[in-house]
Length: 248
View 1 (cartoon, rainbow, N blue to C red):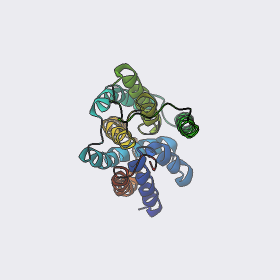
View 2 (cartoon, rainbow, N blue to C red):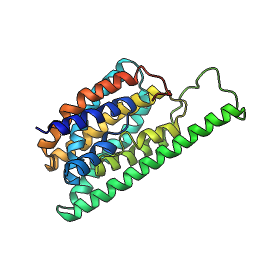
View 3 (cartoon, rainbow, N blue to C red):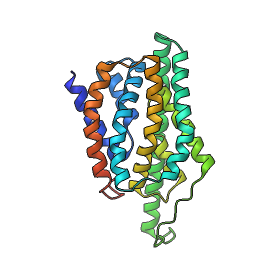
C-alpha cells in the first residue's frame, strides 16, 4: 500500500474538513500530477473516496449545529441527478485517449473556475476591510441577518456543481462553496463550511454509485485515499467548528 498516497490524502482531508474545499480540487490533480494515475481513474477513485470521507466531517458540523438544512435540501435537488448525469456523459465518451484528454481539459476548466471564484471573493473581502478602515463602509449591523433561501438560484448552483463533480470530481466544495458565499453573505464561516460539507454527501454518493455501476474505480488507489482522508477530514472538521471566521 502506498504510504505517500495515504499521507497526501490525510493532508488534503484536513483541508477539506477545515474549509469545505479541496476534495476534488486538490486530490484529483495530486493523483494525476504526482502519482501518475490516468485522469478518468483519478476522478472516479477520488469520488468514491469522497463518499466515504465527507460523512465524517459532516457529522462534526451536524453535532455542533453549524448546518443550514434548508440550503442543503435545495442544493441536493439539483446536484444529485446532475452528478449522476455527469458520470454518464463521461462514460458515453468511451475509453482510451479521447476520454483521457476530455477529462483533463474538463478538470482544468473546473480548477480555473474555482480559482477565479476564490480570487474574486478574496478581492471582495479585502475591499470590504479597506472600506471599513477608511470609514467609507456603512456601519456593521449589531446582529447578523437571517439567511433567506433563494430556491431557484440555489437549485441551479446544485445542478452546475453536480455536473462538474460527475465529470471532474471538482465542485462539491470549491465551486459550490464560492456560490454559497455570493448568494448568502449572512452565513457564518463555520455554517458555510458545515452546510457545504453536508450537501456534498448526497452529491458525491450519487456520483460514486454511478462510477461503481460503470466499473471505473481502481481500488488500489481508492483504499489508500480513504485510509488517509477519513482521519484528516475529521481532524479538520473539529478545528473548523471551533476557530473563528478570519482563520477560516
